Each structure stands twice: as structure tokens, then as C-alpha cells.
Amino acid sequence: MGYSDLIRLGWRTGKFLAPAGERLTRERGPRPDPEERRGLIRGEMEEIVRREAADALGCLAPRGEATMKLAPFVKFREEKFGAVLFETRSEKVFTLNPTAAGVVREVLAGASEKELGERLLARYADPAGKLQGEALTLVRQLKDKGLLTD
Amino acid sequence: MRIDSFHAPLAVAWQLTNRCGLECLHCLNGSGPRTPSNGELTKEECLRIALDCVECAIPYAILGGGEPMLSPRFMEVAETLGRGGVWLKIETNGQMLRSAAAGRLSSLPIRSIQVSLDGATQRTYERLRPGASLQAAVEACRTVRKAGLPLEITFVPTRFNVGEASAAIDLALELGAFRFNTGRLILRGRAVENRRSLELNERAEREFLRLLTRREAEISGRSAGTSGRGMEMCFRPFTFEEQVRSEAAEPSGTLTILPDGRVSASAAGDAVCADLRTHTVKEAWRSYLRARQGTWVEEIWAGLCLGPATRS
Image (cartoon, rainbow over all chains, first blue to last red; front, top):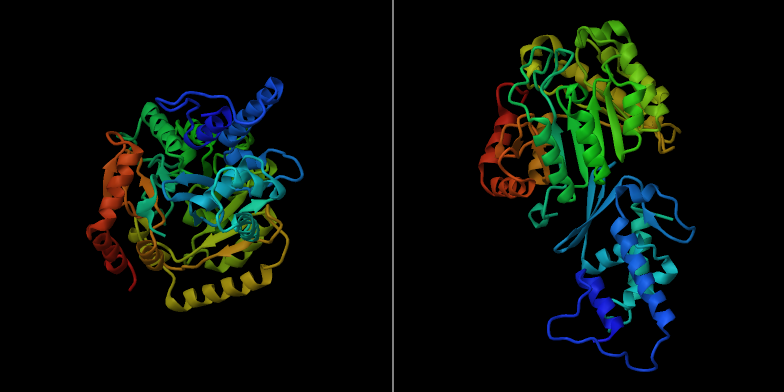
């Protein structure tokens, strides 16, 4: 298992340890520059921190122009089946399947609409090639319902 | 939506205390200055439950009572929940809400502060809420808005005050409320004792509904409140029976926590399914779901809908 695989695994499991019996091996292809690798790992870690820090107060924090955030009074909660978005003003609940939950997670981690597809493709298989388009449709729907804002 | 697929409640409605500085004629819980507070949760128990709610990622908590701000644990509970990312609604009579408290609350994720304004004149307001000051309640609303917090107004229609409903709506607009909540008087607690002097007759109720519909149409589109979308008139479902039936058909996943830590599976507080003195929030949630699968909660709801204290 290479470092990139380890990081991807860590993203999914929250554990940045190679599974029992697996050894870290050199990446295939040209060996990346140590500085570049450090930057990559740092970037991934910062993204995790941003994702973990996304909470109810997060929507009040100023962010970059291109990023989206949960609308005020909206709360996101992970569930076994995916996630829920709870709009506390209207007390309405919206359930999300695992992929839709992944889209919202990426949005909370700071992904812009442009970056969203790329980030999702790094995590989900997309045999039909529809992931990016469907993710953007979902984002538009969430914006229409007042659950996400720019 | 199937609430049994959620790992924890979506909301808690927490009655922090039974005590209240007022003895309102229509109080659902029969709260008042003489209501005993023995047996209520201690500070340590309250904070443990609040932390448990945070750990369960409960998105939303409604803090009420009695008068929640009379509870010595109010601010610490609110801060524990709020700092844990739980959106808060505070239901208060506004008699003791000052700028210091509003300032502390403004650092938290406050969904709304709901103040009861059951009249537009001191005489009417005090008749329903003996000893209470309308000016104090109005000042509390202004304090809430000055602190940048969202304001909701609640109005309970009775024979005393229904004539001031329109003026109360105007007052709510002037105060910058984003929502005006009302509905038929709920005949529970002290309202049952005072039913004869409080309850609207059918004609008065029809007129009240016409007024609400007219004011709703008039207000829609006006710019007020925090959202800039005009004040929302919230009066549907109008009766408690309709609210209960709607909750039974589509449960909200809200645990009602009573002041002594018992948990009710019904908003009316009659169907106790757990005790947070001995259970965790997740255990209480599982008990709630089990209670929902049985018939006893429905029987209690049916009793509430058709019981002698309510109009059929």
C-alpha cells in the first residue's frame, strides 16, 4: 500500500494506520518530491480538520467567495443510511443517501462547485460517468430549498 | 421519513423547571411561583445530559419550562448545548430577560427566542398573566433584537385577549419578530380549571381564524424580522388535536425531557418511556422508538384528542 492509498483509506476510516499485514510500499511511477509529498499530506490533513470543524457555528464563519456553506439554522448529521439535513427554522428534515451525504461533506470541507466533481471522483467509483453532473444537480436543489448558500 | 433509522433524536424539548414567576390562567403545565421544584434534575445531572445530547449530535433543542430562565442551570445548559453545536430555541415569558443574558446567548447558535405576548395592552396582558408586566416582555423582545437574536412571538387566544390579536400582530411586526405563533387554547394544566372563562366560542374562533388569514395575506411580502422576508404567521395546524394527530402520523423524533429527567414519547408529557437519571440519551431514544411501535402511545394520544378536557 502506498502513501496515497493510505491517505484515501484514512479518509474513509478515520484511522491513518496501514491495515494489519499490509506494509507501506513505494508509490508506483516516479518518486514524488519529499516536499511535494509533505504538501500533499498537509493539504489532506487540513481538509480533514476543516471537515471535522464544520458545525452549526461553521455557517456563520466567513469563507472564501467561491465556497458554499450550510445556510444559517441548518444542521448536518451523519447516519448509517447517509445523513440528514435539519432546517431548524422550519423544523424540516431532509434525508440524504450515502452519495448525497458525501457531496454535502465535501461542500462542508470547502469544495467549490468546480472542485466538487474532482473530489468526489477521488472517493467514489463512477462507472456511468454521471457523478459530477448529479452532484451539481443536488447542490442546486439544496440551494433552491435554502439549505446551502454561497 | 422513518425515524427508527436515526441513531439519536433529532430534537429535545427540555422543560428545565416547573417553576415560574407567573401563574398564568392558561398555563399548560400548571407552573407558578408555588410549584414545587424538588425532584428536579441537579446541575451535574443537567450538564451530563446536555453533554450526552452533544455527543449524540442532536441538531436542535428547545429549552422551556415553567420559565427556563428561572432555572439556576439555564445558562450552563444553554452554553453546553450551544458550544456543542446544537441550535437552540428558548421559550420565555420575557419577564427576566435582560441584556446581559441576551449578550451571553448571542455567542451561541440561537435558532430563536420565543416570547409570549398575549395582549397589546397591560390590562389585557395582566389579566391572563396576573402580576406580569407587558412592558417587561416588550423590553425583552427589544433586547433580543438588539443582541441580534431571532425573535418569535406566541399569542394564546382567549376571551380576554382575542380582541387585541390584531394589535399584538402589529406589535410583533414592530418588534421585528420573524414569526407569530398561535393556535387554539390547549386545554391542559391550569387552562382546564379556567376553561369557562378562557375558551373562545365557535363564532369567536371563526372570526379569529378569519383575522389570521387576512393578516397573513396582508403581511406576506412585507419586510420585517431577521430574514427580510416578512413575518411568518404560524397557526396551522390550529388545534392541539390536529397537532397531536399530525405528530402521531409523522413523528418528529423529539424527546420531551421533563424537569425531573423523565422522558416522554409525547409532546403532552403523558407517555413516559425513559428516565435520564438512569438512562443515556441513546437508551432513551431506543425506548422512545419501542414505545412508538406499541399501541400505548397512540392510546394516550387518542385519549388526549377525545378526552373530556378537549372539545370534540
